[in-house]
Image (tube, rainbow, N blue to C red; front, top):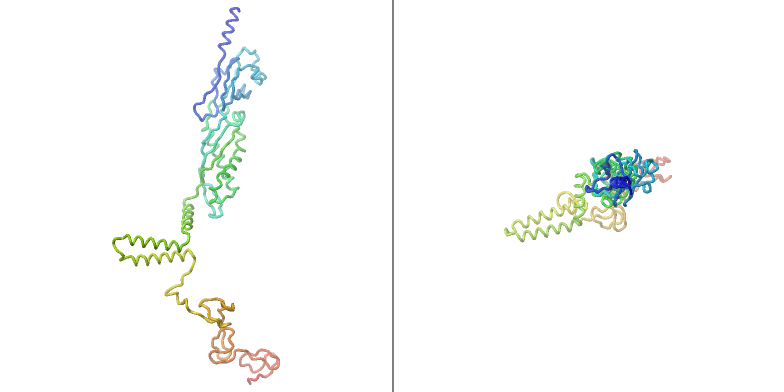
Length: 387
């Protein structure tokens, strides 16, 4: 081997370099490898690790994408570069190209939340304002599209650089999905998983144009306004009471126990128990919907008072609307006596004041009914017997 061959071999060995990227940040999506003068020597070594891809950009065009592995950069491994003219001076000469490493791993625990409340029409509460927050996982699904549409010529692209734009898209799709699914506010907690899957599908339709994909989407909490939450707490407390009568007995038993433990004696025991039973009775009636009569003992209505049925004469409890024996209506109207005008119950046959029959007289000729005291029939003019 001549001296010129040795010099040539030494020069070629000097040109060999290693192109690789070790990410220690945890949030870097794209990194441009710093190639001096953008010149990559022939037979340079390219090392692409798992969860990475290397993208070569030649004269502004995405030339080739390398998946995980070790490569020697030459015409055989980079056919697209060969077609673009990177090797027009032969394989012993350097060529100019940009090398981008794209992190295709999942970026987890990325946060999202509603900056302003979302207005929602609810079946139980009417119009309510909801706030929500959660987390999602993101990865680069198409490195070519991501470089062209998002990263561009950025030498160092992190999740923070696109986080705000992604959050706006997520909140928009979240509001849209929440309105379409029409889930009542009280049932939202049971639908977090279904809601998250529906929103993830909608978000990926938008993110596909960026070369991105949301792999996981979590709804951690959807909160109602404080006043609505207070109303829900009151409703839950009422349900927890259960049977109001049993609650009253339980309270009375507690009062007895406390009085027995009080060394001051039972001076206030009777008053305390009386007040306790009164309050408990009011609570029981309030929960059961029973209307208490106003004033005195039963409000003028005795539990033992009876009223005879106007039809069959059987006694019935006062206030009964229909007879328990014959089913006739207990409450009847009032009519005046045909002779003396005394007030009689409807259907009475004789006056209780003058004893007159309440059956209307009839004309002896045409049988038409005659008014009390009529001397002639209004239908045929026949003289009545009263004349």
